[in-house]
Length: 79
Image (cartoon, rainbow, N blue to C red; front, side, top):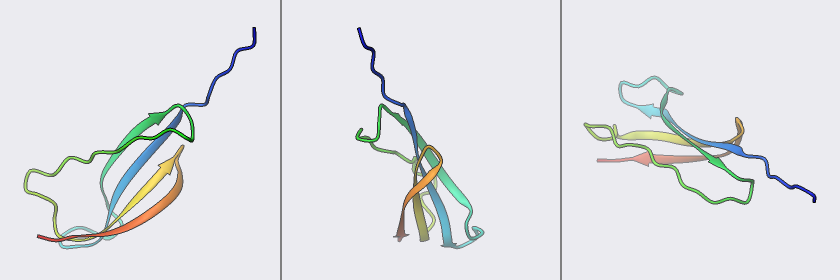
């Protein structure tokens, strides 16, 4: 018989500080990874809330598939 398989892809989310008090610009704040059975798989990422909460400011979330940047979303965290 014929065997088939799908490439397992590594997806990632990186949270990067852009303008956050006491954090250098472009510093990675947190990241999460997941593995998918293929490009059409669905999933989610969870970042753990820091003990003292998120520092208010401007961030960007970078979404990767196999280390290739696929999308960037800008966000603002407030008190």
